[in-house]
Amino acid sequence: MSSAAPSPTPARRLPLAGVLRVGRPSDIWFKPALSVVVAVGVPNLTLLALGRLDLAMYTMAGSLCALYAHNLPYAARARALTWVVLGMLASVAVALVTASLTSSAVVLVAVGALLAATQKALCDATRIGPPGPVIFAFISSAALFTPQTLGQVPAHLALAAAAGTWAWLIGMAPGLVRPHGPERRATARALNAAATYAETSVTASPGRERVRAAAAAAVHAAWQSLLATGARSEPRRALERLVVRAEVALAAPADTDAGLLRTWARDLRGSGPVPRVELASAADELLGVDAERAAGRRPLADRLGPLLPLALRTALGCALAGYVSLALGVGRPYWALVTAASLYQANITLTWSRGVQRVVGNLVGVLLFAAVAPLAHLGPAALVLCCLAFNFGAEALISRNYWLGSICVTPMALLITEFTGFQQPGELMTDRIVDTVVGALVGFAGAVAVTNRRAGDRIENALDTVERACEHAARLIAAERPGPGALEAARRRLATALVELRATADAAAGEWWQRAVPEERVLQAERTGHRTLATAVRRQGLHVLEGTRA
Image (cartoon, rainbow, N blue to C red; front, side, top):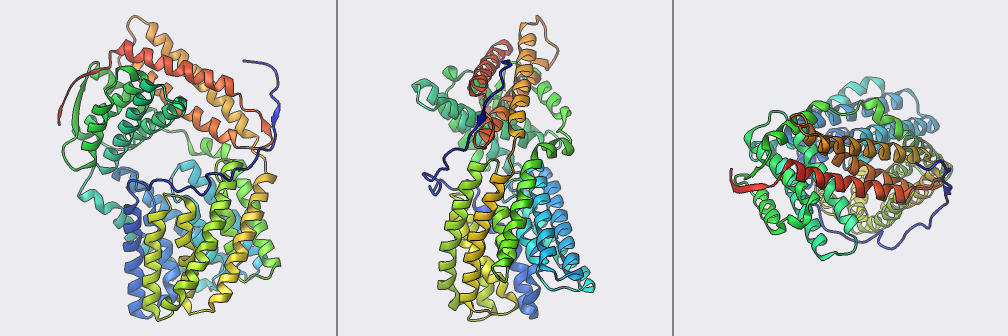
């Protein structure tokens, strides 16, 4: 390790090219889209029938929990959705109690900013995935600016809890039909990514390192999905062997039949039996899985530590955005607060890109609201149906690019404000535009103001972890008789460390005013690590013996 102090990384040019590029949709985009329509629709239509649509904001708090955890296996999804609902209820409780105790906008903005920072840190630490903290910030900020008395809070929380329970049931319902669906999809993604890397290696295509990193991340995600489950049934064991086969393809791409990997992936997309792949050293592979499962996850406190700069950015940016909106006389400063909260990503460069996407999507969405408002104002039923349509559209489009989803989110948010009574469209549109611009500009300024110097420390730690894992695996490879499962467990720990190193390096590369990323050392660690993985595969003799139907 060089003892020379690395020079600080200056501010980089902020990208515009590709920020609005439309990508391919998520392979399960329809699941959150349909789930949220059912989760939101039933409570809202019930309130409509009862003539109490003014209470819809509280049921929306619970209903929108249906957007989460669609990639998780059902046992893990049950736990995750429970925590999502409880987290939503806690956020709403703090917001409603605060709103009942004070009407000071200054205090309300401060509480909203602190809530947004807490939500950001916890969502990132637990890796709950999209839509992340934005939904929590949207609901809790709106609740802060809803007039309230302390006596009303329990009933409103009960409505949110009831809708949250309904959302939990909606999220778990597909497990009755396809109990291993999430694990099968994650394994299929890993196989396809490994096949792409094998093809890239054969043709020596440019960008090979990036393709390998993407494939390694897909394999890691598949293991995370499988290790999150409970009992290891035979279908799950078959899936584990397929993921091992994807790992082998990464380590020995020249010896890989990419077509066979894609065939297995296609078979997993349906509801048929899991393809069975018998591997040499299968017992050792299974012991390695058991060892990794026993290792567990890092404590939450350890995962929260590195996220402190992002939490500070969120708190500062959201507070400043809300106060600037107040100073401009906008009637809904929480819109600026939520806009700022939606920006913060892993680094400044990604935050900038999200800001551009948010502004473009919201401005187009305001125009869409102007076109739809006459239809929505035909009556409460039309208002509810328009909101449901925008709920579906947002989830159908957002995986292609965030700005596309924002086109539907914006009119939906504007229409939700009219559940208590129709308002002048011009006033709503003006407030939304001003708050969007204020939130994006001030929020980004907050990100620039709070430097993330811990990003450099995280790279050093990730490099040290890779180097230690590599040395440990090399010692086991050289050993005459490594312990049962030891080499497989060491190989998987090294693979995981390499994925974390690439993610950490990518995040640090987009930060400003920090130590320069040691790119040569990162590249050398990755090359050495992948060579060690390949050697471990040959040492274990992990190769396909036969492929049959499970």
